[in-house]
Figure 1 (cartoon, each protein chain N blue to C red):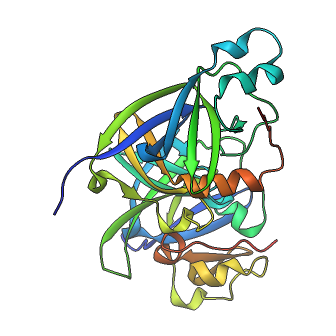
Figure 2 (cartoon, chains in turn cyan, green):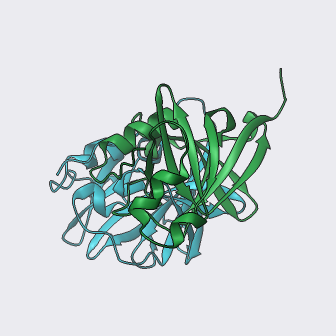
Length: 151
Length: 149
């Protein structure tokens, strides 16, 4: 591992990537056990059973108006501190493929992707990688509020 | 703090486990009578007394297109002044302390949903279901089966 790596880049839909801080990664889970929650939103439809906890499972594709993969094969369990009370919490992100670690520098900062207004609610910032604007997720914003999908 | 166990019933249908306040349960009826003959005609003979709508729900809490006669029971529920039945595979008493319930994560909760909390029961997750809000969900669902005596 390159000690300068400070972020994890993951693909959540074909050709689309997002990133989180390296320190926010807890575990990669293969074939996560998901329990659908009735009437939950499309992007957060299930609880993921992980280490005897039930944690919210989020898919980014529906948040930006894209279709979710037919089968969820990978989940990235992440941890964050809730801004409301400082409590440590966990969530799970659906991945379409494995993640990789990257080094994100300040001079790579760019505008958020313009394909969805949701990014402004759930991303800290954005960096450019190859030809893609990659949002860096704000996990507290993603898991601690109900987002209204804009079609 | 009162740590007494609250009276819930655990009902199961279409792979979904729901916790219902036992005070909301009016009666439990057997569905075997519906397995022979005309289901639509026989259903009104199952529920005695006043007219009562009977529904089968999917695991997404949507009213199914038709009554699922594979279910074993009809649970008759009272939500304010409304009385209705839902078909279920199983029912069991389930006393638990409310402190054992976990609130649904903020990202998946909504005021219109009857699901507000959950509990882990061994390998399963059961969702705590508010009956009044469940009634509102059923009324807003397009498919409804109504049986009147």
